[in-house]
Length: 73
Image (cartoon, rainbow, N blue to C red; front, top):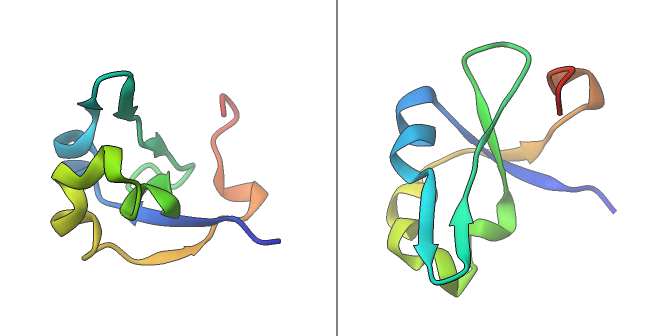
């Protein structure tokens, strides 16, 4: 099974980062290219993150290759 990710730009990543519901939050991960950030695609449909659904729905969705993650991931 392929894991799909929402691909965010810097501004969007910082706008959605943080708590979204009690005990839940979003923490986008910077990719090695230094300009893209990733969140698991299921964040789009998770009710805990509904406050960001409108903006997340505009982000591209794709698989992220192992080589795209930074060394600290």
